[in-house]
Amino acid sequence: MRRLLRLVVLLLVWAAPAWASPDHLCRVFTMPDGTVQIVHPAPQAQQAGEADDAFYARIMARTLAANPALAGRPFVDVLASTLPTSRDKRHAWRDKNGKIVVDAAVPDRPASQEQRRKAVCSKIEQDANAILGLKELCATF
Image 1: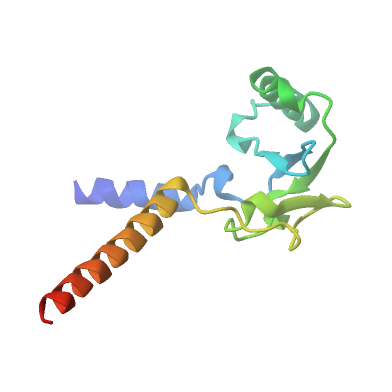
Image 2: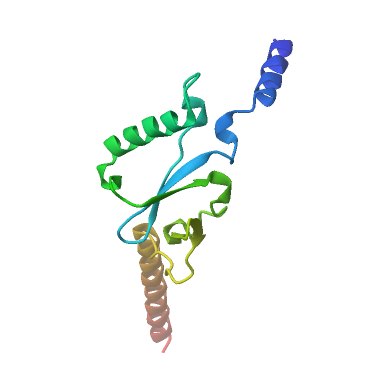
């Protein structure tokens, strides 16, 4: 069993999956509000003997059928390795002359509803503790 496990691990390392490679092309669509939507065609989905052009045409046809909002939108094809490495400001990614960059002019996203709820509850708790503290203080006079 241990030998079989070793063989499986060796095969996984030796045959590193193509999808893990950052050097595949991805298509970046620019939306009307300036944001971008990125389509990462999985290289392992390319059929044996299928030309790259035919592969990308097939994937894009499937993508446009699934998301008609992308039809007619401007796009650029870039290597996945050229995309920004941090997704913290993914909402600020923009296409600048065929390069995807983080636009510093885009403000940070507002806090999520859960984060806002926690902040309000924390403030209410602080205020309640302050009021209770004042009641205790008044009771000592």
